[in-house]
Structure formats: C-alpha cells, structure tokens
Length: 226
Image (cartoon, rainbow, N blue to C red; front, side, top):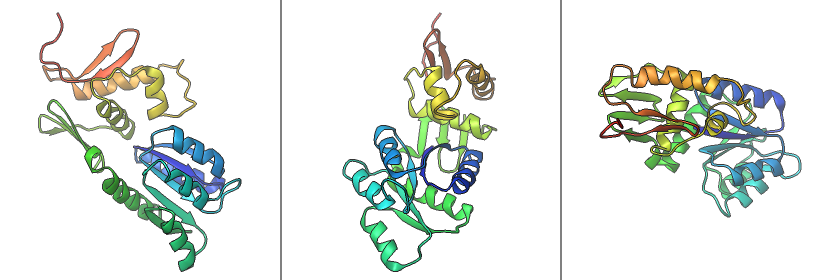
C-alpha cells in the first residue's frame, strides 16, 4: 500500500516513514499543504496522514479541496486536543483523528481500519492459485503460505493489483522503493529474481513473467508459449 504523509515536523516524518516502511508500505511525504494537495491529487494513494498545522495551506484546507474530487481515506494529526478542532477536521471529511503524541501501533491499526472501510474490494487479490490479503500481509499459493520479506510482499502487491498489465522497471522502482529511486541499479532485477524463486519455484504453472524490453507482468496463463 502507498501512503502519503503531509507533515512539516522532520522528526515526525522520519518516525512515521521508518515505521511504515518496515511494515512494507511505500511512503511519500510533503512538508507543506500545497505540495501535499498536489501530490494527493496527482498520484494514487491508499491513505493520507495529514497534519492540521501546515505552512502554505493548513490540513483542513487541504482536506476540503481534496474531498472535491477524491475519497482517499485520511487520518488527521494535531497537537490540539479540543472537541472543536476534532469536529472541524471530521467535518471537513477526515476518516479518523489522532492527537500528538500518539502510539505508532495505534496509527498503524487506524490506517488498516480506514483502508479496510474505504477499499474493501481491493484488500484481497487472486491471480490463479495465488491469494493475497493486503491487510493481513499474507500471500499463499496453492494453499501454502509464501515466506516473503516486507519488500517482496510490496512488490508482489504492486504486480497483483495490476495483474495482466506490463509494468516497467521505472514504475516498479517508484511504487515499491522511492519516487526518486535510481533505476540504473539492478535492485529491481534482484528483487524480481528472489520473488520469482519463492512464488514460482516448484510450481509448474508460472505467474511472474518477463516481457523483454518492457518490464514484468503477473498473470495466469493457461498455456505457456513455446
């Protein structure tokens, strides 16, 4: 899953980014409201973590404009603990609210809850005999659980959500690693090789395919090409 953090406190951004990345999320961030709004409107995110007090455009303003065209789940963060502040955020369209300081585990649980409510149709994916539960972070093939690292699960999720679509290395690098990832390295190829070993290894039917010069595709093919 891909999360956007809009927060102007570097320590909070670093804390959230580290924790969410370790959980296998792809994390982008913006340090002011205008940049955050632009990113939220031009990219596909599973959820936003949005601070109320932001430079250039406050969190409520960001949320009000975002809600004109998007129902992306949003958790608002604030140092204020008054009923009026919470009602203002919720009234603007926030799905949940956390007061600083907060527990990372609580934020994680609330992220899982709002993404479950907001996108029930996308939390379980099936490709042939491969089954993914995005919230439980569980993948099984032919009934057997795949022992995947956080990055391998993120990579498989990206491919599964776009099953039967060819995805280039550049797009994979952006979605699984970082928007400024250096695609001249062989990290994508290495990750694909490791995932393919765990996913397809002993199975006669292969799901992860390389399309030369274009990228990779995850799909069930009834007959392998000669």
